[in-house]
Length: 142
Length: 142
DNA sequence: ATATTAATGCAAGTAGCTTGCATTAATATA
DNA sequence: TATATTAATGCAAGCTACTTGCATTAATAT
Image (tube, rainbow over all chains, first blue to last red; front, side, top):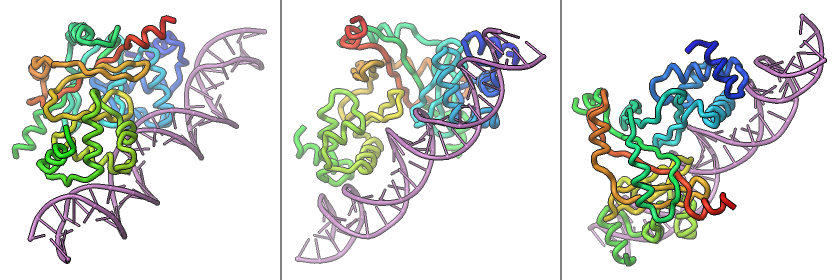
C-alpha cells in the first residue's frame, strides 16, 4: 500500500493524514503478525511520541482499521485489519514469536452461546495458542 | 472443602498452611467463576496484604492449584483448578459478568498445529468469548 | 522447647498506559 | 492563496496493576 493510499484510507475514516498516523499505518502494514507498542514506536522512530501511539492506535481500533490482540502478557498487540480476516495466533512461550493461525470455525460462538445460561449474544471471541516454535525446540534439546 | 482439607492440599504441594494461604484458597473455592485480585483481596479481608496476594497466587499457579485467566482487560483473574477441568469463559462487555463455558474441543490444538509452519508443539490455548448477558441486554433495550 | 526458614507486611519501585493542556499543523473556508 | 478552524501532537504528570527488597513473624522440623 502506497502512502497516497494510506492517506485516502485515513481520510475515509475521518482522520487527518498526518505524518504520525501515516507512519503508524505503514508500520502496521509492514508486519505479518501483531506488533507490540514498543516495536511499533521503534519502527516509526519518533513520528509520534508514546502517548500518541496509544491514542492513535485506539482511534484506529474504534474505526475498524486495526485490531487489538491480547496475548496473555501485560502488553497489547496490534495488527492491521482492513481486508484481513479474523484469525488466531500461536505464541512461542520461550521467545515470544507470533504466528497467525488462519481461519476460524464459525461454530465456536454458536456452541458457546447455546451452552450459556445467562448470555443472549456473543459479539466476539479471542483464541490464542501457546507453544514452542521450532528454533526454540532445538535450543531446549541442546 | 473444609479448612483441614485445604491445609492438607497446601502441605501436599509444599506450602505452609498459613492463615493467609488458607483464606485465599477458601476464597477461590467460594467462586464459581474467575475472580479478580481486587475481589479476592476483599474476600480475605486483610489475611494477606496486596503484595502477598500476588505472590501466593503466582505460587499456586506454579503448583497447579490455580489457573490464571486473561480476559482482555489489564487485570488477571484466577480460578481454582484442582479437579476442575479446563474450560472457557464468556464475559459481558457491559457489566463484566463472567460465566464458565464448559468443555473444549480437543481438536483445536491439533488443527492449529497442523496449520502452523514454524511451531512444533502447542502446550495450551486460551479461548474467551465476549458478549452481552441477559440483564444487560434488557438494560440496553430500555 | 528451640532452630530453621517459608511466609508476611510494609515501603518503594516499575511497566504499560492515560490524561490535561498549551502548541502545532492539516484541512476547510473565504 | 491567505486565513480560520480544530484535529493532532508533544510533553509532563498521573494512574493502575503488579513486583521487589528486606526486616520481621510464624509454621514446621528437630
